[in-house]
Amino acid sequence: MKKILSYNMPDMDGVSCMIGYSEFLQNKGEECEYIIDGKPKKEVEIVCNKFNINLKQSLSNNLNKDDKIILVDTNEPSELNHKIDLNNIVEIIDHHHISDKVNEMRNAKVQIERVRAAATLVAERYMKENISISKKSSTMLYYGIVSNTMNFNANPTERDIKTANWLEKQSKIDLKSNIKEIFIEKSKISDIISLRNEMDMEYRNETLKISWTMGQLEVANVKEFISEKKEIITSIMQKIKDERNIEFLSVNCIDILNGYNILISINKETEEILSKTLKIEFKEGMAYIPKIITRKEISEKIWKKYGK
Ligand SMILES: [Mn+2]
Image (tube, rainbow, N blue to C red):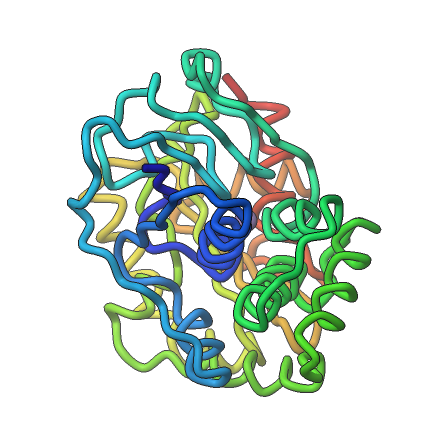
């Protein structure tokens, strides 16, 4: 059986790829399942509730020894919740930086392309092969693209835009008109556990020579959000620093409604790297950027200086 996996606590893009690609393969007569590990990001729950979509929550241990594995929205095995034999990976669909482990995945058909959302790559398969897509998959993949492009504000590629338009048409729902409400809903993060979950910075970036992690928060009205929660955010960062033994930590806070960023850094050392790389200035541990820049774009720049 083919099993589709992504990183632990997947976001909208990751979950939508698992759903979309499993349906695609099933349509082609293949036996396949997806496994969601950990609690998905809040946005996933919001979209699922809104459109009555049921996620099949698998137990995280139902991976058999001879299962063929497909990775979506990641090509980094260390991000998985499973110990897997790299020889069992048969396919990768991703848009992240290529990991040095990919060379060891001898049996994998690899598609890693620099579009903003892996959801775009999955949806393009349907378009290319003219395969019909369900409401569920088209809706999920659409919001995967919306989420990753910050509602098309964060340098979407032509392919992302074209694919999102196609998906909305297939869904036969006015998906665009729900975006603002979903973004506002997603910003209501009340407890520490969900905030830490949303910040998504538990792993050091394995493509870098330095011990680095950058979280990301995508919320409406970032200034207000931070003035309310700065202390909790920095305490979570400190906790991750201690628990994971990571040296450089920051959080990229994106205002998805008003189109700007605020970077929060844990120490002077991290600020120094970010200031030099992005040509920005920190005051009291924070730096304002007057436009949206995603963590992925920042990581790309950091990688040019500190990449393995
Ligand atoms: Mn992604």
